[in-house]
Structure formats: C-alpha cells, structure tokens
Length: 280
Image (tube, rainbow, N blue to C red):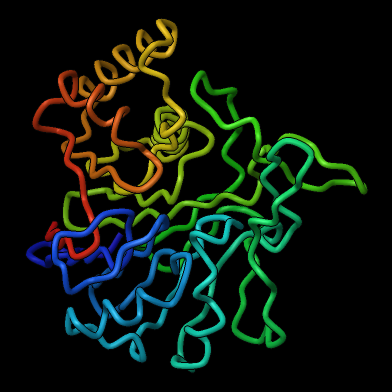
C-alpha cells in the first residue's frame, strides 16, 4: 500500500433518503462523493439526477470525477448513470457484469422493474467479474458469498434462464480504500449482510476494517418480531465489539433498525444524510 499518512479522505453524501439542508434534494437512494489522494470518486448515482444539483450546491465539480462505482443493479443506486455520462467524459464506470440484468420487485401478481438500463456507449464501462485492485490502495470486492439474512426482502427477484428467482445479489460489489492506517469499506445496500460482508473481506485481506459507510438493508425490520429484535440486539453487540471504529449508516438501514442498533453500538454508529460531510 502507498504511504498515505497525513492525507484526509473527504466523503460527501450527495443523495440519501434524508437531508441536513433544505436546499438539497433527497430521495430513496444513495450517492456518495469521495476525494482520495488524486482521485475523485462517485460511489453510486442515486434514483434520479438530483445528486447532480446537490453537487453544484455543495461546490463539487462532477466533470472532474475519474472513477464511478455502482454497487449493484438497482435503480436507486444507478438511475443517474445516463445523465452522468453526458456531463462527464472522463470517468471509468465500474459495476458487476450482472448489474444490467433483469431485476424486479414482486408486488402481488406484478413484477415491477427496478433495474438499471444499459447505456448504448459501453466504452467507459468496466464489468467486474471478480475482485480487482484499482490501485495499491483501492480495491473493488466481488463474489462475496451470500448468506441467508434474518431480516430481508423476499420480493426482490432476478431473472435467470427465463424464470424469476430470489435474487442472490451476485451483482453486488463493494469498494475498499486504504487511507493512512484506516481501511474504509463502502457498501451500497449490503444485501448479503453487513456482518457477513465485513467478516469475509477481513478474513480474505487479513486486516481489520476501520470504517464502514452505506446501507445495511434492515428497513424491513419488524419491531414486533421477537426473532428479528433479538437478532438486531446480537448484531449490534457483535459490530460494537469488532475493531471497526465507526459505522456510518444510511438509506436502506431503516429508521427502526437504526434505533434498535444504536443502544448496542453507541458512539460507533452514526446516521448520514444528503449533505453530510465526513473527513477520515
């Protein structure tokens, strides 16, 4: 890894379900802007183009972004791709080779499309088939083994061999950045379980993740369900005991789940919203 001591990574949330400033637009989705060394990175592109307007208000020039990562193939993380490609001619765009698949949400008899449209111009698209290093201090993780989650959304499906199956989220990828002594993980929705994702990456890399940012996909938590409540208590205790210094939660974590986790995770858990700025 490069010696990055003394350098500060800046992370600005351009789109999230909530907001900290009435001038900014919020929506169900996620987009984070990251300044790391000489790189300007966008992690996810939200459910619409309002992340672009928010960036302007926050003084961020998206034409200078050189790396884009779309965490998975759902519209609330990648619908802004078409407009981004019009305003930025520089960035390489990384996403899973399965991200443009047929992703749907089943509501009764209906199959509602929730995927991302494939752009006509694929010259800047880099399809991720396995974990790859972008540089000595940045890595995209793929092929994390899926583990059945106690709190999940069974209505999320994908099409395979002409039939819809429960989505195994093979299209989900994650970004790791090393900055000084910190190992920072960005996860869009953590469909495979935030504890599972962190554990597998730490085991494979033989280091501890110091900061986690993203959604934990616990928004379907039912506070009246004793099994789910017991699970969240246990999850919060396990995450608190890990070496990780901070968890910045947002988007699909859900307000009820965040409230349930906070007493267990205490000062290690914070909520970020549109306009939040973090320096690491």
